[in-house]
Image 1 (cartoon, rainbow, N blue to C red):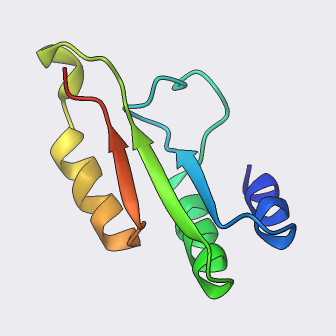
Image 2 (image 1 turned 90 degrees about the vertical axis):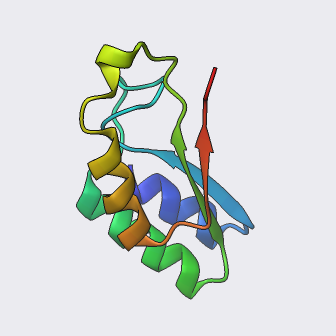
Length: 87
């Protein structure tokens, strides 16, 4: 997935959005690991491109175990914004 992000950046995207391995609607898809997110965010920012991270799962309370820690990890990676579902 990191290659796709880099291609988008190199070919002129002004922003990209990515999903992590948890708390996204596409959780079964090949998503970014924490390390890939860090690399992708750094690469995009070096090229003036914004990165939005999705955390848009439509969850029940029982599905949210670990969400606080996940958001703390994302905070350290410094994406430009989060796309969050909060029904």
